[in-house]
Image (cartoon, rainbow, N blue to C red; front, side, top):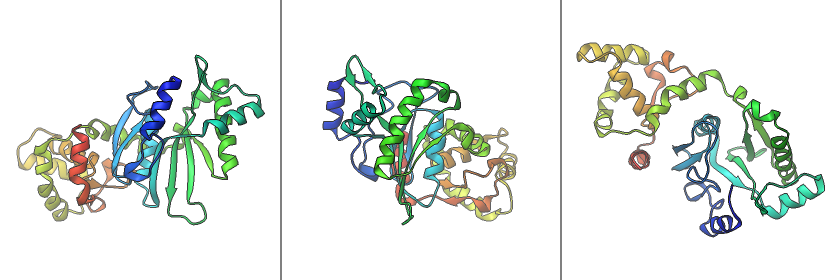
Amino acid sequence: MATEKQQDNWIKEGRGQGYLKNYKPWVTVRDFGSKGRSHRVYGHTTKRTHHLLSDLELATFLLLDWNPSVIDIREQFPLPLQATTQIAEQAQITHPRVRNALQIMSSDFYIDRKDSKQPNFVLQTKYVADLEDIRTIEKLELERRYWESTKIPWYILTEKDIPATVLHNIKWLYPAMRESTIPVYEKLNEYIQKFTQYPHLTLIELSKKVDQAYDLELGSSLSEIRELLAQRYFIFDITKDYKKLKLSEITLGDIEVWEEIRHVSNQ
């Protein structure tokens, strides 16, 4: 939680403001600890680094970032303090504060998408176990009432709402999301050729084929491909099990942002 001075400084820094690449999240991974792991992940949609404070936020973000209808993702989106304090007073719910410093509340994700009927919506992620805590429910109610007043749809998303296959894929990809090595990057063209040559093979089948052909330790080429997928040099449907993924279902990422991905990954 932040002091009043810290929050004033964050406002001056422009946190919670901007769009796409220029957006600055209200809270960053450097500010607070969180349940599970925190993550700094490059966003294909926004072309910037996103600050995610839990594994559940990471899973949710990847689902959004892989969705072609989503055009902007703003995480740790702040709510106007004057509005939430007024709502808290009306609802007779204690507003979040630390040592008498009122805390600016935030929603996990504010999403814009290509849909004229519902162009934007808001998501708050919570683990099922956390929903048993009365204080958590109270804060969620303040958040719900605020978004209701704006007419913008607001939803709670738990780990049970994330497809098991997506979680499985993320668990596999995660170790390579923050690691980018030049040798693997330089093998990009080699794998492009192999994907084109053997579109009928699965990812696992090609990996074994390459390992055998070059007398590599089993799993070596799969590790390289995993890094290329994690760094978004190649793209696939995150809802499909990577073990069953055919090479014809893997496509090239956006060439224009490859160097930017490498830069962010190495920070």
